[in-house]
Image 1 (cartoon, rainbow, N blue to C red):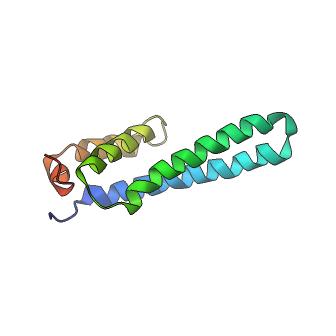
Image 2: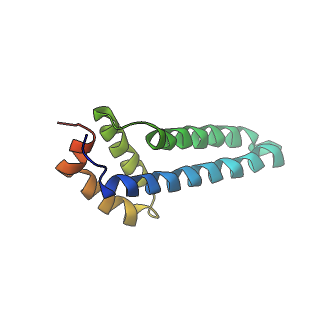
Image 3: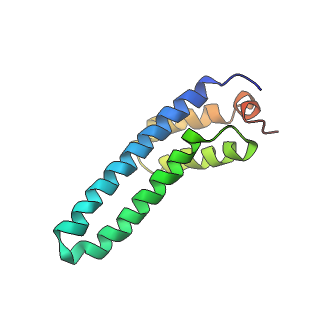
Length: 109
């Protein structure tokens, strides 16, 4: 198995930052649920979305490299590109992610 590329380490930092943001958003949604009864439904929906996105971003941190995981990680990179705050990190990460060395680390042909 090839040695991990630098981009894989940076991807883990990127995914960890996304996890933190979604966890913080979920915490803020708890205030909507318990603070304002009129916003309770919206708070529950947004809490579900935050927990789902947190779980989706947590998976690449705990799974071993597999060919399908390269594609899943690519989707996570693109998910972060929906926020202007993450664009400066996501664009270079995306460029490096497409290189053959990274694909070979995940045994993707």
